[in-house]
Amino acid sequence: MAVRSAGADVSLDRASLTTAFPGATGRIVVFLHGLCENESYWNRRREQRGTTYGEALAADGWTPVFLRANTGLGLRPNGVELAGLVQRLVEAWPVEVTRVALVGHSMGGLVMRAAGAVATEVDRPWSELVSDVVTLGCPHLGAPIAQGIGHGSRGLGRLPETAAFGRILDWRSVGVHDLVVGLAEDVPPLPRARYRLVSATLTTSPRHPVGHVVGDLLVRVPSAYGRDRYGAELFPDAEVLHVGRADHFDLLNHPRVERALRDWLT
Image 1: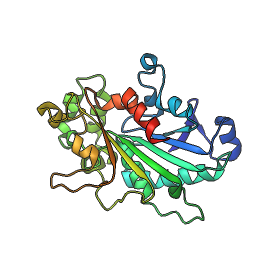
Image 2 (image 1 turned 135 degrees about the vertical axis):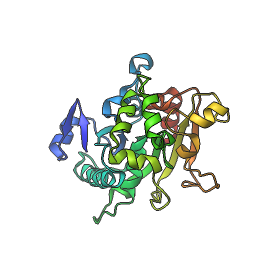
Image 3 (image 1 turned 90 degrees about the vertical axis):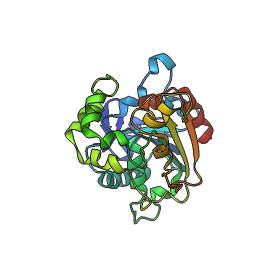
């Protein structure tokens, strides 16, 4: 796992961070991609929209930091990696860090949750600086498509947008096994953070039979909100946002999500 800038890893020392982030502010927004993605996926459809989440939030005084992770690893080992990385990032940042926001797409949101459960024995833990956690199409309760590996991989392989995900399902990495079940209530939310949960469906309404069954192609709405069939909620105080007529990857750069992010992170 590494901080990335201009297509390369950034060392977590003050000199390297100052060079990579010359306009660093005290507010850091950390972006973590999902399964079979990398940091470049946050630029999806930039040519059509003219901006990205990072650029929009930079205009509001945030400094976007994009990470690359090995999503073939398990959620908890990746969570340990993320916790250590963000701690070192905060300690070596060119200016004093006053606020941290986490934005995770798909599996990235699960890794962020796992990181929040890692104990950090320092005077100023990074987790105490986290004010907001935003998950985009995150399978908090698992992704049904990952459960039907054979049928799922063949179906996903027919679509160019999801072909890579289909190949990953065939490989059956540890990360994919974890994606089947998500993270349960034994990984609690960060106590000082506000949670915002974004879901999408191919249909305009999440109540449409098709939207209810297939969700955004990979994640269904209840899982994205952490709500099980018995009424239990992982994030009872979270704010939720549904994006209609969108698939799983549209959430990487969508105008409705951008507006919400700018409003949430004021």
